[in-house]
Each structure stands twice: as structure tokens, then as C-alpha cells.
Length: 189
Image (tube, rainbow, N blue to C red):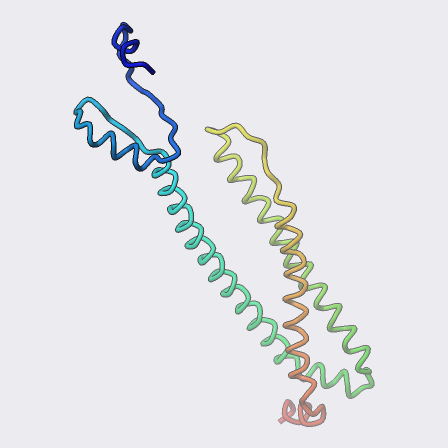
């Protein structure tokens, strides 16, 4: 704007937005003016700070989720392997009365499906109830539609089936290495 025209205007602006390709040098020039009535905000610097804060929050959030996931997986691993070790006598008896390896594996795979399905039913139902409760709590101030997380639910379904299947196979490989007769004999002593 021409300075002569600005002097002829009968208003004093309170805010002026200036777009610049070099905001840092513009801020430095404004500092050099040494006018106490002049304030400035560098939005590019503010955006950089906000992005850095979001990055830090994401790192902590994903780290927290990773730790909780590892604790959960460890808990599931310990529970399933302990359950299989406690049932060694039962498995040895089934093998001794004529259950073939194919039938035994089919039984274990069916148990895997039952464990996974039961865990998913409880988890998904409780998760959806929690999601609905959070939606209701936040919808008082913000009017939005409820978001149903279909993709994360599908990922969790696949992850649970794979995780339980791998843990069951590990436990069964450990049990299959043992001698059936020795297992029955040790349990009877």
C-alpha cells in the first residue's frame, strides 16, 4: 500500500495479516522498527511448534500402546501355555486310547477357534460399549456422528486369531515332544 494513501485514511487498523515467503526475515525487520505499539505473530513458527508437540504426543501414545500390547500378549501366552501344560495328562490319555495326530490337531484347532471367538466377542462388545460411552461424553459439547472403527476391529480379529493360533502351536509342539507313557506314569505317581 502506498504510504501517502495510508496517511489519508481515517482509521487505525488493529490487525494486519501479511503473507511472506520469508517470514523469519519479515519478523526481524519488524523487530528493527522498534515500535512499542507494533505486535506480531509468526504463524509458521507456531505451526512448527505445534507439529513438534503432536510428534512428541504420538511417540508417547504409540509407546504406551506398544507396552500395553506386549503386556497383553505375554499374559495370553502364559495363560495358554499353562493351560496346555496342566492338561498334559488328558492329552496323553487321549493319545493312548487311539486318538490320531490328525484328530488331535483338529481338536486343538477347534479349541483355538473357541478361545479366539470368545475373546473377540467379549472384547468387541466391551470396546463398542466404551466407544459409545466416550461418544456420549464428548457429544455434549461437540455435535458429531458416532464413528464405528470397522478397520481396527477387522485388524484385531485377524490379530487375535493369528496370535492364539501361534501360541497354541508353540504349546502343542512342546507337549508333542514328550513321551506319552512317561507323561501318564509321572502323573500317576
